[in-house]
Amino acid sequence: MKISMLFGLALAFTGSVFAQPSLYVQGTHYQVLDAPVRTVDPNKIEVVEVFWYGCSHCYAFEPLIESWEDAIPDDVVFVRSPGMWNQLMEVHAQIFYTAETLGVLDKIHGVAFSEIHQRGNYLQSEKEVQALFVAQGVAAADFEKAWKSFGVSSAVKKARTKMSDYGIRGVPNLVVNGKYRVTGDGTTTQGEMLKIVDFLVAKERSGS
Figure 1: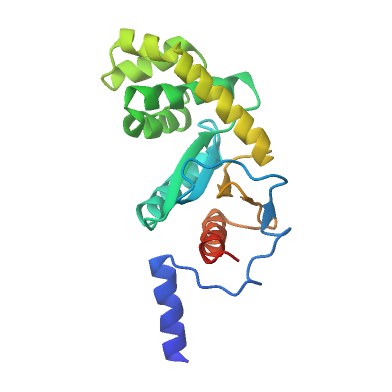
Figure 2: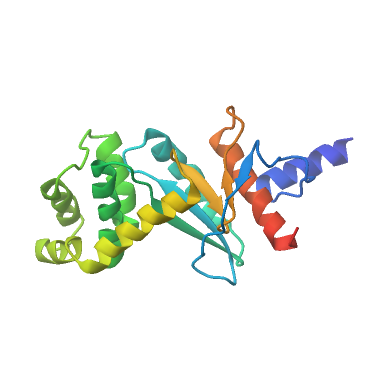
């Protein structure tokens, strides 16, 4: 009995999931997408987080998802994708892809969340966003060029299309390998969402 309990704890600490197939059920804990969505690397199992900087649940999820990301195996790739269904969300998606284009996403991502949820600055205008980037050492001219670039505009459009293909209606949400959308059962915690992700990753890895 004690050995069994210790083994269970070891699994919890390593983040590994060796669950019976019945632990998480299709239609309750996850949905199979109507059509598979292309992933960034066909040689890896992709996990996508659809998020919004203005979402308090996404903000609370950040420490969990970052800790999970730090421990992912080599055959898994993690991708963030902004969700959007209104103009403000499109502005925030533009923040994400502008930061990515300028190579400062590691700086801007956390700062954007903090600016909104700790300081109450909702980053609604280009002027407010530019001030955020400049405060992180980005030249105003470089920000302006990237913010209005075709590449950023295209990335925002692709993210909007991808969200639609995923059938996303709320954030944060997680999609595994372009096939499965984590749904939970109405009482699922954010930590449990990641366990469902691990279960689906294992499912993809085994080819079941």
